[in-house]
Image (tube, rainbow, N blue to C red):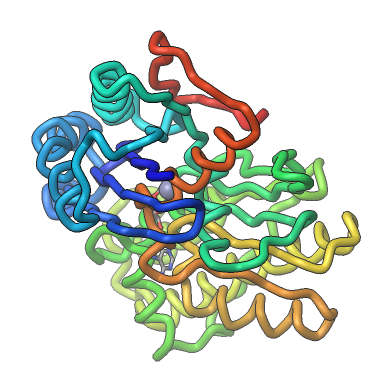
Length: 334
Ligand code: KG4
Ligand code: ZN
């Protein structure tokens, strides 16, 4: 069985051909990152235009690399949401037109659920686990049982990737800030600054906007907004920021795993590429006898292979989407 995955939830345009549930025959990703850099963040209009320009050639390239023809496809899986509406519409319209033309089924996929299954290619997946979803748009702790996903907690303001990107911008660094701060932090002192832990009503919720404001006030005068001549070293700030936010993520993920009595934590989303998160969570969970899953680096950020896999699983469970399906920027996990 051959599944085409289509992913256009944000600034990437991606198509992938998956054989069965494990064999990725191709996974082509075209990023519009270079077009957003000078704005210091993703510009939705530019992202959706890029998706429109790229989708046809990314699709053709995915088929060429997989050495198949369109008629060989059995199923189409497409990101239905959440994401930017303009970008989502491009992928959904493309996938629906193709499904109609080929007369094959189509399945709409939740982008964040797909980030979790990016871990399971070629592996025996756990039946019960806690999922830690950390991306530029979302931060969530989930409990997954028999392939159903339940939310335990989520951010009440910024997503953790967004906090990385905003803090990097405050420090005058490029976009996206996550990988830059991750690298910079390696040469800094993680104890140079202490960030107050945000208080939450709900045990497994997160908040990252306070830490971002604390960094802002170190680099700019809160009254005048002018640069602070006594601004700290960016290395020390990167290390301290990373130490604080990753520390909170790890602590809550371990708390959730113990609360749900599971022996696996599965991490997904762009921030799962973070080196300190990988190292600390693996070490701290290992001490409690909990196994941690991280996707391969190429499947950490947005890609269509994970969409194809999640779509294939849903199809096996009987899900079919109708051709009047549309992109949903606020799609919920059900
Ligand atoms: O999942 P993703 O590719 O797109 C969304 O669905 O949002 O995640 C992108 C986010 C960006 O905020 C980026 O800064 C962050 O992932 N990111 C990282 C690292 N690599 C990417 N954050 C921290 N450390 C990294 N190494
Ligand atoms: Zn994503």
